[in-house]
Length: 73
Image (cartoon, rainbow, N blue to C red; front, side, top):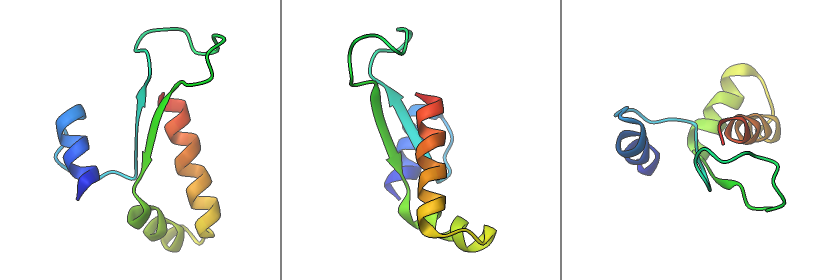
């Protein structure tokens, strides 16, 4: 439920999502000397459902969500 609330508030989409991420400094170049680039939130329930639906392990599904979150940041 928290993911749907964040998705609605920050993206204007009133639906749950599997991953949502926020850049630390919007518009700044990634790859500067700072190690903190932002936050990634993964919906563990959605991640586990996707693992079952696609025949992946939970670890594979988690890594996929994590990678997607990094691409978005």
